Amino acid sequence: MARAPRSQRRRFGRGELMQAAEPAAAEPLLGCLESLLRDWRSQGSIAAIWQDWPRLAGSQLAPHCHPLSFHGGLLTVGASQPQWRQALQYSRPQLLAALRSAGHAIRDLRIQQHHAPTRPEQDSEESIWARHPSRIDVHGLATCPQCQSPAPAGEMALWGHCGFCRRQLLASSDTASINSAPAEARANRS
Image (tube, rainbow, N blue to C red; front, side, top):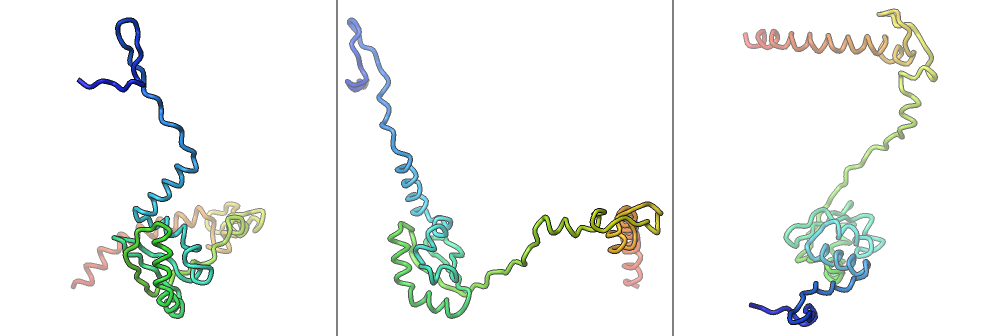
């Protein structure tokens, strides 16, 4: 049977009492975070590369070239234009060295042309709501020609009737198209 270390034993009469081991000294939070960041980089996280990319690629390349994927030590970097792809090719050895010295487990670097999809400029929620057809404070009120109920004038201008009649029309057209589809399919087969 093993015996506890002397620091955990205390004499009590003719016997000994066991004491809990001293807790490990508290490590500063900054040290824990740095250790976590080191592990994150060495385990091959694309997010860690994204975080370090502006510093590693430099202020000229970083806005035009982005890490796309990182699998098995192979980092794929996409360049937005051919001239930026060429600039990446020329600075490939320096970029690999910078990535490795930052602690990223990069085996090789592949550079390819990559056109990032452009996102259309989206309107703010306020501007969408400001022109919404159901706003009576903006468009005013009108009478629906179908149900003769008061309704927002914006809906009349958009659909020619109120939103409730529009919904009924869409529901009936969906049902009609569903019911007519099998008949059209039978007619097309003959």
